Length: 287
Image (cartoon, rainbow, N blue to C red; front, side, top):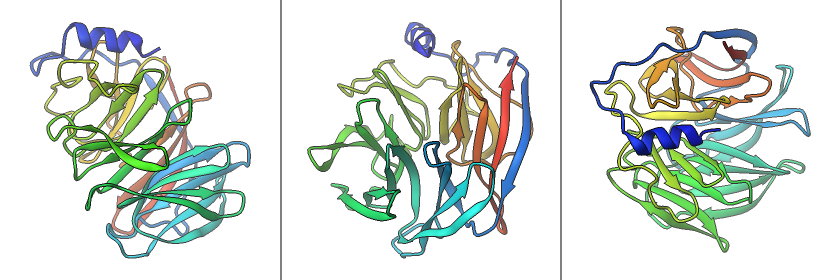
């Protein structure tokens, strides 16, 4: 899987002068798109067992009680636009069984999707952490990025604790991806960590390409990492040679997206303009 990427990066970090190699041809087709009831959607979680997609709606970043979670069908129908209300700029989502973990500015909250109740809340140990993304390891370990504190937090013994703190390596830390021993962090730069010890797996950022920065969404596509960026509307792909290239020039304006590398299902929260907020499903494959 991604071990070739780790080996390539730890062996030789990509320099700013490296020339990108040609990307595989991407084939992308829109399946459906929803705008009804959405405002500043940031993240999606797919619940295959219940045939739902959950989307976080920020509605102004801060403690304002205006944020909410929307619930949609897998076929692209809005089921309940304001399913869970009263949140504070909810961003990252991650689902395990019936529990939906969500980042809510300064708290990690846990929602029981079967009854719609918040069953737990964990306050960050820092005053203004700007909690952003949530990632779940196979054993249930929960990681949360803190964009304002340069910190990756971990849920341990009923508390949200500081796991990795590095103001430089975790500058504006945003998207997270975890699998096996790997914990990959986005933000101003992409970094690789050992998810058990917190030690870095590479001596520096994954790539020093000047146009690859402020990474938001991260997903594995079977042979490379897909990435969205805050200030670049395109979808990018980071391959095992450590070079990132856009899959096309199509402007997606994606936030924290979902991708299934078996079916090619891509679900994007999109903020296309001040008045155009939507969640769109695509079929994305490579050859």
